[in-house]
Image (cartoon, rainbow, N blue to C red; front, side, top):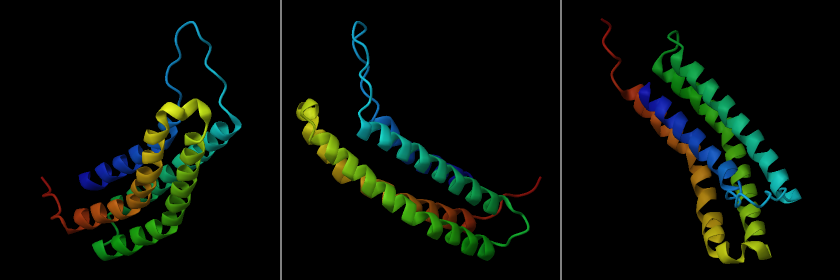
Length: 151
């Protein structure tokens, strides 16, 4: 079960990355922080909604894996169904994230960071899309591992 917990934590960390990436760097103490643009505010709302979805997915998976009344085959089929249901949400958010980053890269105030932002727009969506597969692999490994001995 530790592997599932680690996979879920990794998934949530990956999911949290977009929200953290959009936070502006700390402003100099004398300067007031600029208000987020409409695009930034809209994407932040999408990011928060996605994080809530990912947390629900994690809770569903954890409940299934913790259910002592289910055998490994049933756990596998039910966790696969949960992951199948959430996978399109990961893909959609990955697309939204890439579009948001490309939009940010085109802003004149981000000209000095354009290359880094575009690199993130290319790499981050693939990482997000990979999360359900990584969780699926962690679940398979956890189910294949021998049960801990009862003391």
